[in-house]
Length: 330
Image (cartoon, rainbow, N blue to C red; front, side):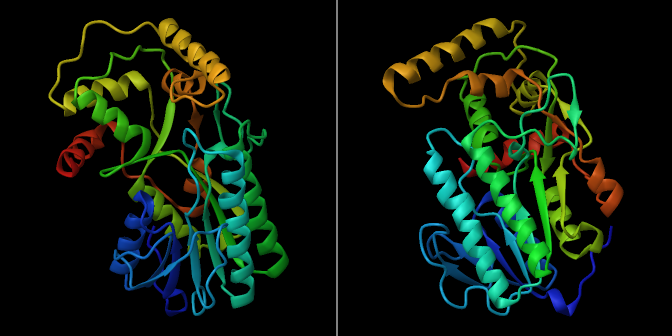
């Protein structure tokens, strides 16, 4: 789909601009001739024209931060990571979004694209691939904070008449990726990972370039106003497929044995028990093991059908580029 380039959406604000997705989005915006203002936790240079420093939810948004802005792409937030507190999720993901929306309304910003997460709903059943009709409530503090922020965005848009869209990305991948995928690449490259078992699970993901494309389409598409879309590739891959693909990309042979899934699940339960005894979260627990072994399948067909979005990347085909970017960064 060709994204319209119009004078009335020439200046944008990107929160979380220095992150993995934010940097790709800012480059794409600048390449199309847009003027990009970044909202960052601390001042820094980057792929934007000017910047505003503010820790959303913890500091008052500076005067004029959104003045003259036509569109806000809101990516900033506390991610679904080990060790983050419930209060921190509420403060940054909910209160920060609320403050940004208040500034949006006051300044008359006309478009607001919110990057949420599929974690804003409960994990899908193991035997199903769900779409936007799956509305079961999230089970953890991170998911609850993203769901509440989504509702703030859509309610504000209905009440004050501006164009707002919620995107729910699945796991985002691509060269320079951070988080769990980066850790897996590092562990495998340094020989510190064990052969993951084939449980036949299905995991949905989306390439960062395809996610950015969806955000730009949703920004200007009248059909997207007031809607929520899952961002997911058409293909779904198992953790074992990811493991074998990374072996190939790293020029390593695939071991002829696999770590038993039951042993991994036992390790997760022991981590849960240790967390209770020590009164703090540990990085190895049942939730982490579940992300490795269980399915999390989502459909992005609604965005494809309603907005003409077409993902162009596949995880396994992109693993060599991701490994090469990791090597360059290391």
